[in-house]
Image (cartoon, rainbow, N blue to C red; front, side):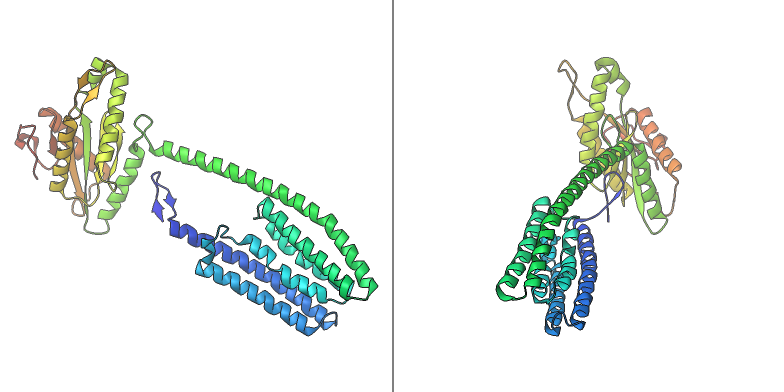
Length: 392
């Protein structure tokens, strides 16, 4: 399983395909039960002499071959190459041939009627998965098949009784089949409506999930989501040798931007800067708006000196960016960044780790802003050159 951007578990493509294939095999298992019941009925009919044992055996073997072919198609993944991977229409039509052949071999109208009830059972399964067009195709195939049985009896059977009853059964089918089609259309309409409602609910849930972890203004991850990422990193240091770093990033003199250019421009700066910083960090990093004009950067599996260098490069790049007010006037901004580290030796809690980063940020502000300050260095010992790259 993978983790989506809203913190939920999502399936990979392979996992989704495997789940669908397991579902198809379970459905085939239900079809096996239907085939088995038909075979038992045919065995009873043969026992009472209504058909020959050869017909009954041939019916059972044909059913076994059909099930085996569908099983191999699902197990090998051959069905995935087809337009309709569920093979629903094929599974509905497959029992028609052995069923109609056996129907032709029966010697009484009563046996025909009994078997005919079982041959239309696959159509009932089809109402749950087939499109309306495919279902009509299946109904036409079954109706024409039985019509062929009736004409065959008319040509090759001399018994007027069974021919008469065959026509009665055909007339009954002509009455029943349109009703089955109508029922199928209603089921399909309900399925379509349910699918649409489910999609709407899924979309709404995705929006709600996004709102829960995204900042309204910038669209970045919010404090809640950042704290969850921090909790995952904290869990890592309790299990093995591991270290990670956090950086609190603050826009220098942000209040003066609001005062000079207006709050709308200040909001635009937050959005543009946030998107730039989010694109500048690694995909595995956690980054978002921590509050106000502050951003939090969580860097997994990071050494302190590497983190300092990366933060310094980021600070320099931002200082070179151009921003514009509503009148097209250009201005620049600078960042102050406080860095703190946690590892299996320190095992700092959330509050302590963030407090250390906040103290480092405060020290950077106090010593002139536009610099990176590590939490492990006393502010009094910090060089006052704002362009100096801090070291551990």
